[in-house]
Image 1 (tube, rainbow, N blue to C red):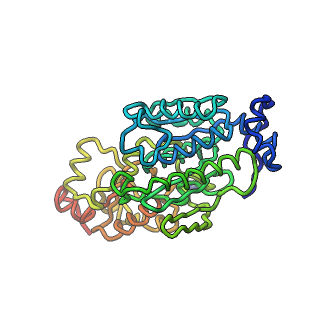
Image 2: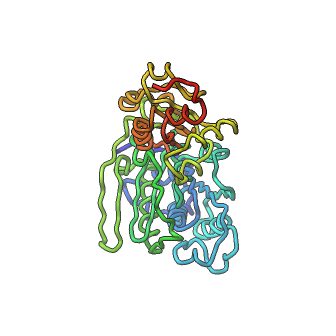
Image 3: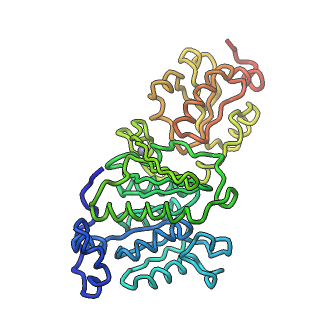
Length: 383
Ligand SMILES: [Zn+2]
């Protein structure tokens, strides 16, 4: 998708800068105007590791005026196989600080802002809000959803990349022009191992990180066609690149016409955590209620059944509303939801639908209201 330049022209290049960037200035598509846009641009890279290394080093060399680095980790010996921002003498040093030193060694014209913190729902909007464009160099799902959500809420482009063993992927998510990360993955993949567990070909970082840096430069200067609405997939063993189209999800909780999520989630770790079990016993449910709840108890039966007998504290949302999507507006994405029906058949269906729509913290009552009545309120009339 062709879009206008993200960044206005900045201040005029000095004679020294013009010399340094001469190979860009002779490219007609970039020229002095594009280089001045790069000079004015502010890019935030989350993570100064495998992907962050080529991203930050090339953006520094390219003359991106302000580079923000978020990382609170320290350099470890096992990082050196792929994280080329850091050298042997940096072991034990803060990655953000080590990144800053390498960037300034490449290009001292760059303003480097170090955020030596863990990105969280408390600081994400404030940090991301200071930049024109966000690049993801992280390797965990919780941070990825956090960056996506903050970028959508702020209306900023989010250049995403991911690596796994010999495979890499990249895309640009920008809700104003195309899908967001949640459109592609409404629900976190729960069984994917990290680089530490699965291993990764070090040089893969360079391939994917370079694609991300390329997209950032294109978006800032408004040249070419950005990867918006496309997913680039790379396999190092086959040396194959495949680009597939991805569409905006009309029911995306975040970026659709009628979003259900209007702010950051309270707990991204919980959102991405593996669910323990889909079922909850009536005994555990009663215990949870006595501990003060903290969940939404939803009866998916019909109104006449709800009138006859119900579990105390529940709200009614008949199953049909899960099929036609009308129920979703009432079910917050980040709140734990416990579903029940008469014996547990309809609630299992509702659970499947909710999970496919990105709800992770959802369970249903084993045995339904019938089990509840039998165990705790035998005086009530069951039907
Ligand atoms: Zn979306």
